[in-house]
Image (cartoon, rainbow, N blue to C red; front, side, top):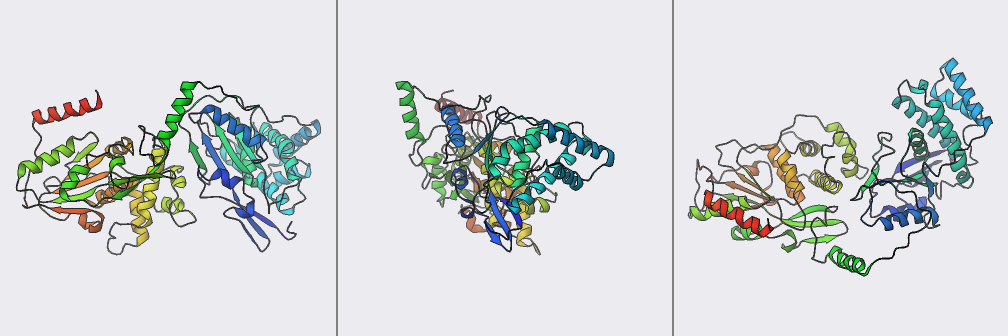
Length: 546
């Protein structure tokens, strides 16, 4: 134990993910990110995570929870409404009432209130000086949270019940673990499971402020720390939402049928990354990004009809899916007008296509998101998807968790090295803030385009027909195109005049340019004939089996 330590600082590990948290929580503190020891101050990397819902295999889920709290490999201590020891001796109960009476008479500040708790032997003590100090700091932070969150603050009628619970649970569950605690090796690890009441929320907050690791599991997706922690908390959503079963007292033994085992074996083969066989929506939790294909004009129409997994360089690994996508501009019009319109209309008639004929199509925001952008930037200097998704301004919280993560990651990528041309006197940070802001205002039809995207299947298409008769393409449009391209959406821009539009905002190297023979002005969009449209829709329905 370092004799001269006088301050303990806790930092949430920012790079926490579903793939790495189990490895990190088993590491000693010096082996984790964020650890530092300098000039009497020790900084530790803390792990806090929330796991909502349950996976498809619930037996495996509950067996894993059982292991977390019963195996020395994990050494997590179970906290739940059922497992908490609710006993408290009468002397402590009376001491709490005494402090509350003094507070009622003198209207104590939070620091003095804490000092009175300490004087009545109601705060835990530790032989490790930095832990001893941290216990007091954590109680002050908890009382400050209570004062700011509850009506009438520390005059709230529920304070006594919450304070009694904090004291008794600290003594019954935390004190035994502090006897041998060493902040240079490890801090206590807790696992919360299931439903909760108000006192439970403040007790967990107290443990988190102390520097303990905390993993929270709730099958019905109820958040015990909702609106309580300023720092964003890593959150994972399993696909199903079910009522919480009692915490397992033993491992489940499963007698599976031959048919069940066979179906699971087939599923395992299908689910294997890189197998080339993907079930519908199998990759919904994966993070997409694009590889922009370089094509000829003829290849553009051949590849646009292909499934993503059939396209060259489609890869799935480590929770990420690389989608070969098209980003092209067609300038001018073919001498063979029929071929020109047939190809454009065929693209438009594909099931997941969106045709834009009125410009601009993006929402140009005048909101100042500078503060939000800077708060979303992590310690690595890049935007943190988790911080974004947990912020109050995040507009996509209604979407499935996997899709939210995909959008957030795409925003991070387009802001990392912006491909949008800066305006005069605009700094690189200004460009990043502009892209960040515009990403928060995706039109509904664009969001729906992303919602339809099953990453291994048909790639949604955005088709822009810009004849310059119905408005001009804007900078906000270009920012949205960057986001959609990063996500893996196919984009084809038609400009019969051969004039610049996206070139005014984006580097030419980002997209293919296909020059056709004739430059045509005032070209009206040609709708497909009713016969052709009906025939094409009928073919699509037959292919789908409708």
